[in-house]
Image (cartoon, rainbow, N blue to C red):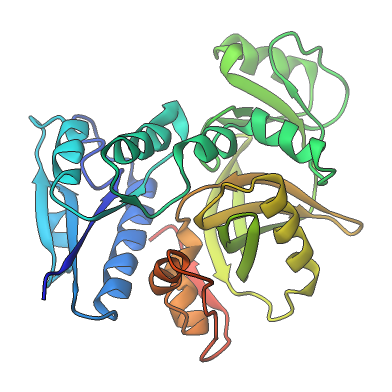
Length: 331
């Protein structure tokens, strides 16, 4: 029987940064996600052959006995290698940051070949991967989100704010400010065209692990994120995957996002701030998120299998067990 070849490109450890130093925190999260997707694929029928791109510096850290591994060395052009490998496979699963249009360009490369893309299409990534476009979309659909402005031309007003890169990932390029002096210091050192500023709300930091297809959303689990603030910048330290079994207050919100962005497809993460009075949507991540790595242990749900089911129908999300799982992001 001919095997279905699935190319997996986790950008950080798959060679996307093969010409520069690997950021420790992002590399740890990348390894965690990649190893989990490999493990989930290994539990499916043997008709699937994973094809893995790997940065030459992390080859020994990944366990994959049934994979075809393609090592990306410093002299390679990782995007060219990605495009070359697309032609040899049946489906592609890119896992990449939205910054600088990276994820969008990878999705476009797959779409141009007509191969199966196991994530949201490029035009959905273009909106969800841009915090300003996401903010406008959420407002248009009356979904609660913190008050946000483009940074350029913004006049500081009293209060606590957070300055964010329009397309940054996680806490990357984010700065907390609560004074005119801090505002002036931060804004003098960045390209204001690429940033926005948002009211900084105090509350629980929650992420939702979801599946989407054709304007429908399925909530897999809710996760609690723990951060520390160092030098006015957030740093993610821990995620409690499936921190609660009561998902009732999040279900409707997932469907509202599905209606607002009907072309989202596959696994998507939604970042929230939950105050005593309301739940606010911060970001929508059209890709695998770190929380994915704890879902099988928490619920016994194989998200890779669930994504495969989306190609022909609806996912069958039936937990085998129900427990919280702690992911230590610091290693």
